[in-house]
Image 1 (cartoon, rainbow, N blue to C red):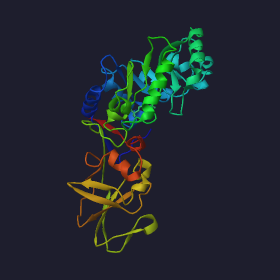
Image 2 (cartoon, protein in one colour):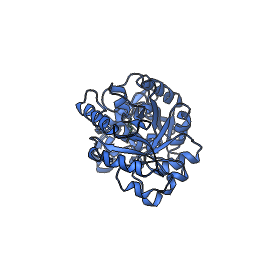
Image 3 (cartoon, rainbow, N blue to C red):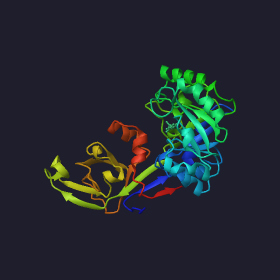
Image 4 (cartoon, protein in one colour):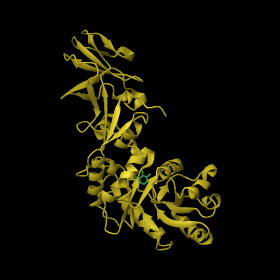
Length: 353
Ligand SMILES: *Cc1c(COP(=O)(O)O)cnc(C)c1O
């Protein structure tokens, strides 16, 4: 993979540590934390994040098996759960790399080779992966029968835990408890994500799966006190030039300068994760002042109206920062911080402090 030099992403591992401690306050004694580092640790860099968290957590979770292999090759030794459905071409790799598979359909018992460890995933209301509740007895029979495979856990996933007070969370929890009773006691058992952990007092069983909170964001619109965004994203002015009142900027020529002044050009566009729909909505920080992104965001460039400030080429520009974080961006785009963070081009190098 090439490394770009048009921007830089800084990942503050002391904020990650702060968030870990902050979330730990919500975790029951005797409940272990599984840190979710899927999608390259929500864009923060899976290896570095996993190395920082490994001494403190009980396990990691990834989505794709290749993400688990990457962590093993980097020297991570604690359990790693793979969420995705096993794919026939990859089934041998679970055992080879000591990764824990997820079984969410009966055929998965037949696909993986002997010696593979797995967790069972039950769908209690998410409507995504997982066995249906009615299959619990049948699945319990398969677990018992297939002694050459190692069932080490059972889990489910909440659909509505990002906001407090959801009756659906309690309903899913109740359903999961009933399913749980069909299986041996000693399994790792987990249902709570960040929201389930921070916003609900429902039993956490013996493990919680924390993702977004570790990276400094609440999962919905209700804040979790004490969290600090871990990632910031910076670029610079690659060109600064005069603009005259009434002149149009960018594709569509929809924005016209309201006065004479300067346009700053950022060497970052929607291919980097600076979403096209932010045109006209985002403000970026240069020095101590905010300036508006004007005109359409293009694939590789974004224009900023600098008004009367004739900044030097190379001047630093803060895109995503404490005063305008991924939650703020998400509000402008009617999305969630998860999508903002995982959209930042992986070819922009991450620096760890
Ligand atoms: C992504 C994910 C999580 C983490 O959710 P957060 O809201 O980021 O804490 C937990 N479990 C599963 C199955 C997931 O897909």
